[in-house]
Image 1 (spheres, rainbow, N blue to C red):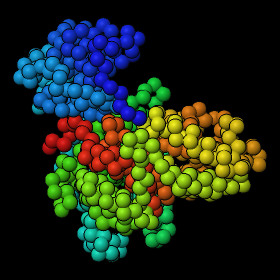
Image 2: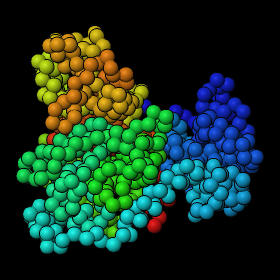
Image 3: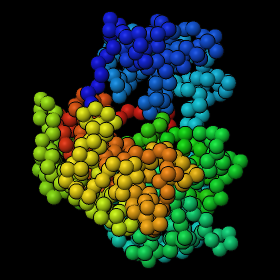
Image 4: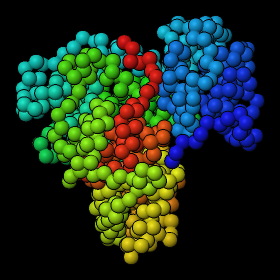
Length: 606
């Protein structure tokens, strides 16, 4: 979907919800231009009234800080705020035409405001904070400080005592492959340090390494009651299920002793509280009762969630954070994994900051791996060349240059129909595990939710294909057999979480049931208990994180879409295990590769 044009004063609609009608001065100009939304303005005005400050420069900074969090940043830099104000998912903005305050006077006005605490020792009762030139909503500065202090305290401890001979023997047993030297280094780090960050792209053996780390730690660490207490977690139910499946499969295939482990979502691990959306039962006063905590897909973990996790992990416990820092970051504020990796200089050769980077691929096909490397490296020429070269693992369906309409979709339709037939056959027979496996054989991914390149349009298109090509496909009821499901909100009562995927299958006793992946055996839930689900023929790239599909078809938005970024293309491409198909224009591909996401944060500063 093309971005909407900038709103001009002569075009103002008095009923436009994007415009704060009572705004004046700088707030009004930035709101009308499309930099600020009405909500950003209202929060800033409210803060000014409560704190007795009507300086429009301070209120502008406050509104921009609110906007930054909305768009994923933790803070803004007053000296480079102009560079990060080019627009969001709805607007394209000519930032140079706006009346930006003079940098020096702006910083001075903010520092003198009764709304603003200056420095780390500033008044904790003030809602805004200015530290080292970065301007925060105080809540997010405090969360960032929790992450910084907890990580630095854990990293600063002396090496933990383990038997050196036993460690060497275990490492030789678990990492005999000469290509696994960085995995071996991760094992040594996990055994001797309080925190390990295991970073790497798809196919580099992260979850295989996690399984071997668990065997290593069970071999070396003393236990209470003869059992090492291990927790596995991930941000979504789907990612948690995949983590448990991968660890269990590695243990069986390689004869590893990982114990009786099960994975859960982070929300479930920390313990839901019905009276709060951002606080949990486990915290500084009630720590998690585990000796080892492993968190996968950490690129999806927001700053708020990471701060809550670090507060809850016991000081004596080992913490292992796993993920791909080049993927899309959390939909909420923060890019903690990327920040932690960036804090570690020369992380590819050393292990400062507790970071071990895995670089050699063991699973991915060479073509998908090369494409991922070219995207991550910001090389649009190589990305375009690899897409056009095609082959068994990578293909490109180019859209019309003028209309942006895709042509040659017969191959996409064939993949969709084949996967649906296999899914329907298993679902009608009540074979829930097989139906879930077929559910992941092909997935169409979009950047937008609405518009010609969005989720709604392509979901409708797929439903039309299935109605025409699959005679048995009956979609005239809500819970029809074969319906693919995506959970859109956490529901701890039913034990389903935002991002979980499932399928409706036949059940001899109840007629139909909804099956969801949970480790070795699917969980079956009465569909009437599901409150927040949608049909998942297609999904957004953000929703696909933590998942893998045999074949992925990614529909690129047009070149002017602000959602089109390097991380978006990289994440979409790396969801595929065997084949990735990109549908779009070469111009869109080049724009994506050349546009990395910028999220402001103070965490990268050591």
